[in-house]
Image (cartoon, rainbow, N blue to C red):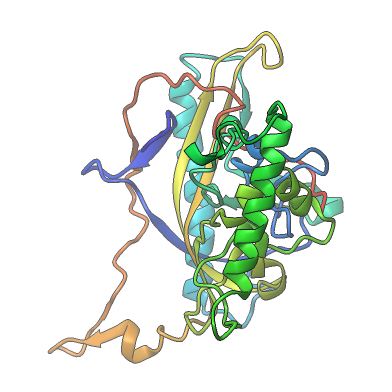
Length: 336
């Protein structure tokens, strides 16, 4: 992987992928599916945008509440949450040998009896924006040989940025409305300018950095019951509280060294990172598609990934040297 975190791997040293069923909790305090995802309520710049991710808050299936679910699905959901406790305990038994005083954030979050008396899992997407332009490069003047000597006005970064924004806005207008037929079909790619923006926060950023108008949003593999991709712009409206989902994740551990300015003891943060999510019942999971009959009449599942009795091992990597300003995302109170 491209970062300095540690990952769980199989005995064959392949990245461990785990699939499990769970239920979406849209009432919890850790979900981030609104228009601004995990961004704070104030302050928005390109550096902050680079860390923007969606967060799904999930709970295990419960045989008393989710009586419509197959018992095997409920057992699988519980087994995954139990496995997380095992992975965490085993990892901590090793990590404590290095830093016993570190602040630890486990895979799960705990709600006390007054708020439901349950564990919640927060599954985080990868960054929704990749390869964002650097602020300094967007402030560079866009001129040609023919422009030399034509202006007596001294250029400044703010004037260059304003000129760049004006040109980018014009280009965006051509992209949306241009062409002989004035196309009205949905764009082939989701852009920053296409995201819902009820409080005008993206608009404000685009006015300052017009070149961001064409910035593409990374679309995670999240699908509805018919297999249609749900874009991040649609999470808030198309993923409901109580939806049963199949989730595929990888497990990640950040070990952040002590920092006297704000993290004197260091910290360890365990994360579940989203690979895919499907709303259930999923159309392809009919009995004919999921199972194939053998000559002896037995049924064989397509998906052979199961939780084994042997705990996977973590990938061996050098001691991470990261800070909370790197790719880490600390989950706080919901502001949306």
